[in-house]
Length: 260
Figure (spheres, rainbow, N blue to C red):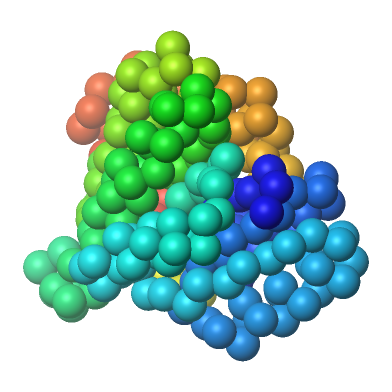
């Protein structure tokens, strides 16, 4: 396989679009997600349309040990990963004290532990080759605490901080780490996180997953460290860094809460 990208969460949304963009550029793919049917269909479509090689791994990365299983399968098949895209993740809304702990734990496992473990597993080979690119999908919510989505916001803050730190560590080895920070996106997240009535998605010109994926992909290729999609999102993210913390938290809750 040549110029291979491993993309997690590739059966839907941004991950799905990233797979199509990479295939369009002539790159091979390792696609990881839970839904075998969607992965097999995507594999068939991409191989037929772009004449690339696509290897699929059906795996739930919220399960402890799954990241190691993905890595081991890639190594067994002697696939060299040039690009690692940690896109898989999910959110949930509601007051933390009233939440389902098992869902919060799965979110932490997927959004933080799996992303960190895959990065740790694939980095040594990239360092030895002195080339490679990693993109971790964070969010504009990474810049502020998020009442009613406390764990999700915190996981994305981790992704952003972690990615910036690792980028600093490995850039001298010819490797870059990009943290993609999209805002609200038409990709199914709204429904999955029970946000269909949230102010966050009201009265907004929300981009689709393809637009965000293209921005993220080319940001990764160019070696950008923090890639915030959209002018409004850039303004919001930078404002969150300078306004008082208490005000930022109150504003985040207002935008996040459901309408009654």
